Amino acid sequence: MENIVPDSENSLINKIEISIITPIYNEKDTIHKLVSTIAGSVVPLNRSFEIIAVNDGSKDGSRDELAKAAESECRLKVINLRRNFGQTAAMMAGIDAARGDIIVLIDADMQNDPADIPLLLNKLEEGYDVVSGWRKDRQDAPIKRNLVSRIANRLISGISGVHLHDYGCSLKAYRADVVQGGWRLYGEMHRFIPIYASWMGASVTEIPVRHEARKFGKSQYGLERIFKVLLDLMVVIFIHKYFVKPIYLFGGFGFLFLAMSMLSFFLMIYYKIFEGVSMIQTPLPVFSAFTFLVGIMCILMGLLAEMLARTYFESQRRTSYEVRDRLNFGAD
Ligand code: UDP
Ligand code: MG
Image 1 (cartoon, rainbow, N blue to C red):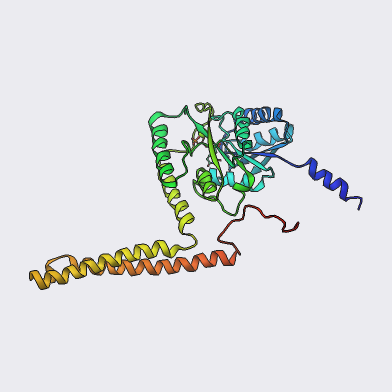
Image 2 (tube, protein in one colour; image 1 turned 180 degrees about the vertical axis):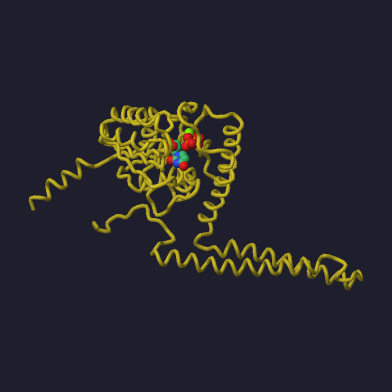
């Protein structure tokens, strides 16, 4: 019995309210400043917090730098990944380890200002589940980065129906349950968390944040990222809309092709009978056969996808719904 009281007290003392996660790839020069400015801007809030730095296989001595920083700042927790897995995976590692009720993600390169964290938290307090930073005055290459990203943002906003100005800004604050739900992030998907969250019923908003040109290290990305982002957007939408019923998508295409096949078949017959055009004088027979095959293939692939979806849901005991919370179900 004696143990119980101190234990529960302990967990109360150890209760962490805010987890600030930062992915680090070759950012040795900023680490010290990063940690101290994050701590400096969160301490005045008088809330318990942890900083989780995920070293994504840096090759520049960031690891030692982090170890040093962790010695002098006990609220800094460091996760060293075995190799470079990419920014999204690094963020995911941080999210998995986070214990706070609120999760803040921020880049390590100091392009975002940790002093904006309290602003995000204030906004979250107003009752939002996700507060996204918006680099209103973005300080990156004008065409290669800013223009491209403006177009991409418009596109993503239009397709997803979740209207933000800046999906790419990683300075964002979340209620933990929104990001620690059943779903995982892959590829470049971290920028779609707000979309996914909003689809799941979370309230999402954005506030302008400061942005500075990169003073230390260099950006890890080039133009090729735009394609990855667009492909990831397709995946997100597919998973959201059709993961539970893939046959609706595949079967839809299947029917479309079968209809085209039928149409060209009857057109072919019509030409033959009423216009006296020989079947092989037109491309219609080939087109009809081709679309027929594609149609059948689509439907069969849809059935295959249905089997995969069942394997996924049933082998992992997943549900096709997500519960926000439950009342009066008793403690467990
Ligand atoms: N990053 C990472 N793993 C990678 C690439 C980047 O953890 O493979 C981190 C990087 O250290 C930084 C953040 O992700 O904290 C954003 O990277 P970067 O500044 O290069 O992207 P940009 O701001 O140019 O979009
Ligand atoms: Mg950056």
